[in-house]
Image (tube, rainbow, N blue to C red; front, top):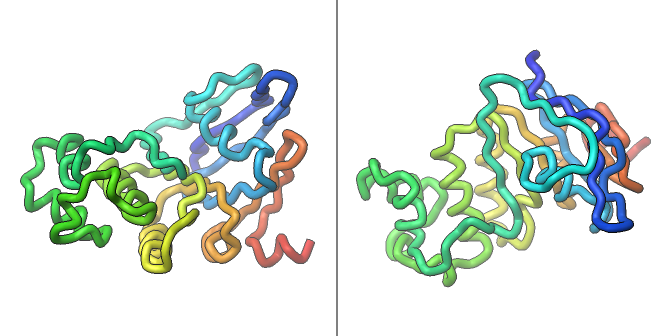
Length: 209
């Protein structure tokens, strides 16, 4: 399998706090990694650091060739409150016909008059679905997800789980959702004290260690 990303001695500090201390890992094509750990230990900052969204203090990040990345962050930043759900998607892909945009939104269960809701009026679950609709059109072969099921209703959680189930690329995600981790992760990375402990196993086996 091809390497998707190699990280060597990555260090990220916030003042006197070291969120990530000489982190090393490799992700290969088709793998599904879950990053777990207590709040505030540096999980989300690690996701952003490897994408170049945060500057790192030390280390090296090498992405493989032909990697097309799509990133879901729990804050749903990047959406525009003043736009409708339809325009949020259509403005990004203006070559599409309205019926095509509505079809994509329908695939994430945003239908009918909900297409014309302002983003600011969407629920947390609807914003998550809209973000996933955008990601669907990016045709990425690598997904990075930060708490994808956080604060979602049951229907939204089920839809996202089905979407991830159907995805056949490489997946790296942060989650506290034990069901989601157990369902998808084939490898567990536990973050604590700035370091990663690698458990090459699913969540059920990890809990028995």
